[in-house]
Length: 219
Ligand SMILES: [Zn+2]
Image (tube, rainbow, N blue to C red):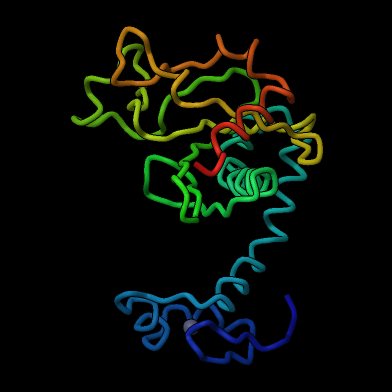
């Protein structure tokens, strides 16, 4: 720990490191945190993200090398991969795309053309396709195999992020499947809970490029 003073995002400067945790439980800081419509400035967000970065790096280095952590890495990187997918799709389509949260899709085009919504799945091997939402009354009827299927209108494109060897980002792959081919033929209101059958056709660079250009064309 350094001896530099800590300038808290609440505005208080704490001169000694040992007083930082005491400050977090102080009235001034607590009032700040509990403010309604709590606003996080870009500077504050950057500062906090930087606090976590070296810890994240340490976790990643360990997890990449330890087989037992490989299942968990996917859960951690799933959110981060969404950033990569949106960027990749933007570069390839020339359309602005924003990530969204709390919707049935992860990102959507952000221009005046027909909107395209994409759902990202981080997949190391099988292309299974169930939602991570818990079984609720609303989802009750969608469950066929114990998995919760997506409703057929929840997104327009499935973007499958496949990390490279040892979770390499440089050699990772993106595969895109239009939602129209994911619809469950027996239950047209929902999507299939697995896209494994589509691998043969869609796990291919040329096909991916065709699908992206078809789905994202400005019409
Ligand atoms: Zn504070």
